[in-house]
Every structure is written in structure tokens, then in C-alpha cells.
Image 1 (spheres, one colour):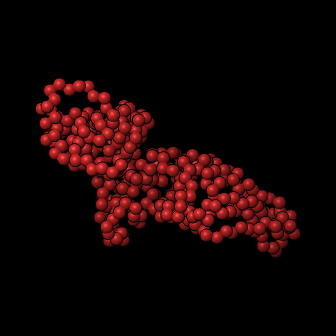
Image 2 (cartoon, rainbow, N blue to C red; image 1 turned 90 degrees about the vertical axis):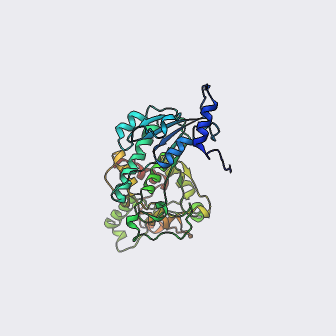
Image 3 (cartoon, helix red, strand yellow; image 1 turned 30 degrees about the vertical axis):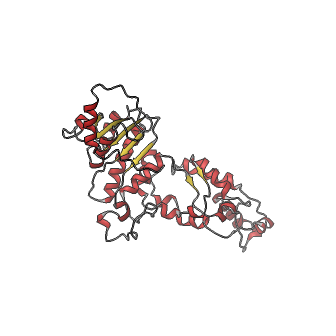
Length: 356
């Protein structure tokens, strides 16, 4: 829908006029329930001003106004909102005050906490957002939308890294890739993406999606090497080692999605291709949080995935298949079903507490 709504203009005066014109209020049946996190900030205050207006789109709105400080006397006292004093950096306070809310349909997250470094910004602001989502999402079953406000640093990076990060050409647009460096906006986006169930998108090209590939199970390679080391007939020979079958990523991506319990989205066209290596930049903090939340073995993001290698495999424009005939002719009969192999290894890394 494309529209420009002028109803917010003069919201403060409109509020006074409405109060004077309406001496007896009729009970309202709310269509939408907004939770404004950071209600005493500049944008938060405007949201609390505008949402309760009778002609605000999506209304009538019920509004919860959340802020760390006590309810101010300069504005919010006469607003038809429920004010909740809550420190969203304190998980106990958040659970106590926000988890009882069961009717929230829209979250407007417009707050931040400044840190001394960008790493601290990522940790603190990421945890604040996570605290709110953990308290609200399980209890507000009608939740439809989460609005996360970011700023210009999304495009130019934190001031402390201004001499180190090469920024994009102007004007900045929403489809620009992330900069190479820590940014708490990226951390928050990644947290929100996880809670929103962002689908498991195939990052590669059409050839890899529709064509055929083969793979080599690590256990099979170990068996093959042991065989070659003890069988006299294999002495002084070079051998390929692959599973002995072929597969398409069109099939395998669905299997992988099911094993990871993620929504599967396959090949979407050349214009939707993306680099997994680029997509994983700046997500170290998110991985650390996932490790902590799920009680996983302590690993860094770089230790659990070779994103550049995956990019090469899924973006190849050529088919590469190995022959196992020589190994068979020399007496090695081992093989693996590649789909079963994938399932086995996902189960194994789950057992080792490497992934949730």
C-alpha cells in the first residue's frame, strides 16, 4: 500500500481538541496494541503522541509506553497510555514487567544504550533487545510486527572506526551490504532475524541448484585411507574418494533445512544470489550469544564454518564429478548415501553441542 498520512501533523493540538470535544468516552475495542520501548526518547515520544489518535492507521490503538525513567510530568501524564517503568537491560525487571503483556500486536523498539566501545555497544544493546523479545514473543500470540530503529551509523559505521572502514558511495540505500566491522545495529538486526524466523535461503547460483554434485564423507575417507595403507594391491597408487553417488542442491538444501529446523527457501534467481562470507561478517556476537543461550561448546564463528569454501561450492558454474572405479577395481567397496551422510553429520555436531 502506498499512502502518505497527514493525521500526525499537529498531534499535540489534535489531542487537546479531541479531549475538549469528547466529554464522555465510549469504551474502545482496540484493533492494535503497540509496545513502545524507549517512550521518553524523541521518536518514542512522537509514537506515544500519535498512536492513540482516533484516525491513526491500524487503530484504534492501545499503547504501552516503556522507559527506564519514571513517568515524566512534561508530557505523558495526560496520554491514554499505560506507562511501564522498566530497565530493559535488566532481564529480571523485563520478565517481571513485560512478560504479563499478552495482547501486544506491534513492538516499536526505539531505544539504545551508549557504550565505551562498539564491542560494548553490540553486547549491551543486543542483550536489551533480546530481553524484550524473550519476554514478549512467547506471551503475545497476536504479535504481528516489530519495528527496529537504526541510524546513519548503519551505513557509515561507528565513529571510533571512521578511519578504518571504507564507507559506501552516496546516497545510501537500504540494499547496501554491511560494512566490514562491528556495528550494534547489525547485532540487533541479526537477533531480530533469528526471532522472526528468517528463512534458510539458498545463497548460490542456478547451476549448483539444478546441476549435480558429489561429496566425500569424512568417515568414508578415513576408511579408504586405512584400506589403502594395509591392502598390498593398493600400494603406490593414487585414488579418488567420494561417496559414490550424486545429488542436487535442490534436494539437499531441503534436507539440510529440515535437519536444522529452518524454513527452506531455494534458488530465487540470479538477482537474489549473495555471498555467505559477506553475510556472516559482523555476526560473531550473535554466535557468542547463541553458544551461551543454548549451552553449546565454546567456539568462534570462524571455527564452525568455512564460508568462503561454501561460496565456491554453491556458486560454481561447472560440474565436477569424481569416478570411484579405480578404487572398486582395486578392492575397495565402501560408499555412502550422501543424503544419509548429511543427516549423520548434522546429528553428530548437535551431539557434540557445536550447533543447537
